[in-house]
Image 1 (spheres, rainbow, N blue to C red):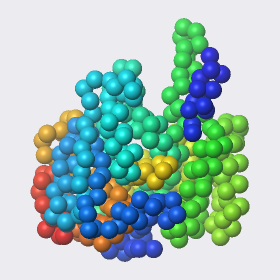
Image 2 (image 1 turned 180 degrees about the horizontal axis):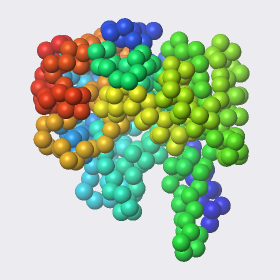
Image 3 (image 1 turned 60 degrees about the vertical axis):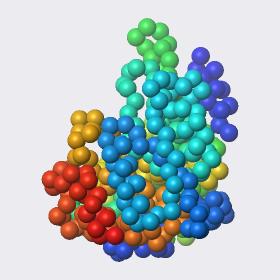
Length: 378
């Protein structure tokens, strides 16, 4: 059974600066040689079509804030909206329709709000569906301190790059006998080399000095051992970048003690899920953290990585910052840097000013008040 599942998964694989002064983590998500779409999209003469998944819960509210601010900033984006379906699409085995996936493939760029998958209901995860079907192999999440918003740490400036398609999230689980279940962790040379190459290229392109490979190869010698072997192989091609290997549990301790020890972190799927959320906590939480998924063929899908918060959905209380900053990364991917700088500066000024903040940031403002304050700073 295990060998059949394994064959199934492997066979299916085919310096701009922030206006605030912090280094811009997304001047260009892909190399110029691999993103011809970005060069074409950089023209503002005609609107750019981008796919928008408003998502669930608070998703439609914060997506509306993004659309409103983009209109006021005169961003040449035409949204092609797709919503989560009410029934499972047999072509995707999830509530995401095949048409919505085709929209991303066609447009090559998109923005996604929070999506919720019912736990234990047998439905294929919506986020997993997107990653698998669109081959979004790298999740890039910068964590940097926001000026004027005080947390326990100052001057955090690091980037997590997470392998997005395999590992413990391959979705290969089965019952061996009653009371015993087995989950397969898949690590392949192809996927490991691909994400390692991206991490080192990203570090070089952004003037980063260090890449840390996060692992547990002392226990999982075969799987994480292969991941490290691939990282070492790629590191040899980048002699100007310091390469190190850090065990996952030690990494967590070091991040909490002194996040300045790290620059770019690259890791397999599960570790990336954990570490990226830990890093978000260093700078104020997932509500302030941008994220973008990079796929083969030049696809970039920016996303808010926080939950859908159904308890405050429809109450005009949600913080749209994460989705807005993720939308800014999308603009940088499209090489619309002037628009990205303008919107980002307005977001940071609004937060630093402190007059208009949502409840999660210690304020009492509504979603619409916060969005209007950003517009006033444009």
